[in-house]
Image (cartoon, rainbow, N blue to C red):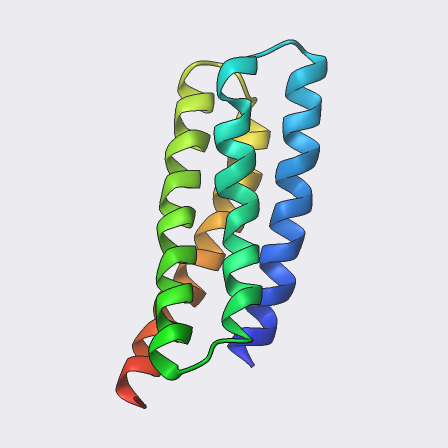
Length: 117
């Protein structure tokens, strides 16, 4: 169940991230680092999706751990963009809330997978 929710949430987050990055490019803001947010924000879902085709339990856990690391990196970029006034308070709150929810589900899923391993 959590895996399916993670796929849905991470895909939605990737779409939101792409939209925000496109908007930032139109605003001509932080072009040099937009790709950092774009890569980390979309990589979360890519790794979750890839985990569904893992060759073993260890591979599955590894993919989720990579997704979690990407989540933490995305949090970093969101914070930087907010502190540098590149994104609005509303954009920050939305992105942070979505990323936090995915992060919590990833942590729970990794913990469960390790216990059941």
